[in-house]
Length: 194
Image (tube, rainbow, N blue to C red; front, side, top):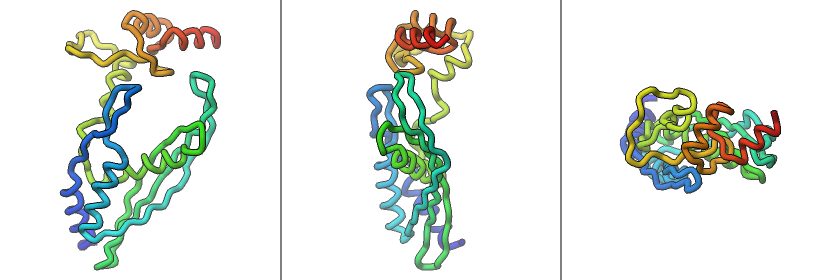
């Protein structure tokens, strides 16, 4: 494992950071795209003479109904990425998990793409300047603070179910009544279910 480990360290050096070039306009956030991660990783793997083979495995597949009543496929995939050093014959295996949701036939592809992206992000310790655990909306819903957060440009409040923008007044009301931020339409849906 000594030869492949040395090459893997060089790949880690090359891939220490990937910029967040992707943009989710609906939820208003930026992210590192799978294409950007794979482009950078592939360039470094080939530069250092490492080959890869990816084996996907579907862990779970189910149909779910969205808040708007649409039926979509939700798939969770594990990928096993085997890195091969042709010079020494040594191999190294990394794994990643990903989920994908789609109304058509793209749920598996989305899950595989996410799983490969996170296998490399985590195994190569790639920084993207974001943190999936830094979710202000979830923190606000689950852990109200007594000290107000002072932010000149706070992120817009959004409906937990459909993602629509809502006002602070609507957020406060729905939080008290339903335990989470809901727009008027989703509040009506919740009332009709109850």
